[in-house]
Image 1 (spheres, rainbow, N blue to C red):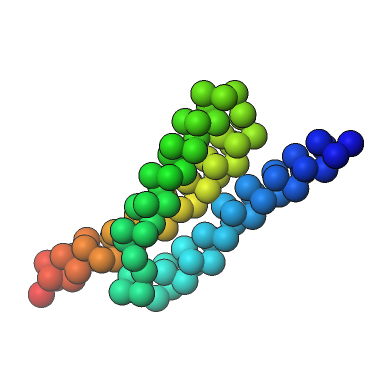
Image 2: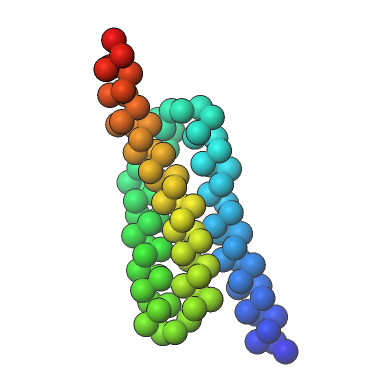
Length: 97
C-alpha cells in the first residue's frame, strides 16, 4: 500500500514538474523578450533531464523516463523560445530595415 502511495505522489510530482514550465513558455511567448531568462540555466535543465531519462532507461524505470521526458519537452520548448528571442528574432527585425 505504501509503495502505491509513494509511486502516485512521485508520478504527480513528475507531471507537475513538467507543467511548471508552461507559465514561463506563455509569458515568454507573450512578451517576446528573453532578457529575463537565462539560456545557460535552461540548457543545463535540458542536459540534466536528458541524463535522468538515460538513467531511468538503464534501470527500467519507465515512470521516471516518461515523467522526465514530459519535463524535457516543456523545458526544451522554453529553451528554444529563449534562444529564438535572444538571437534569431533580432536578426529578422534587422532584415526588414
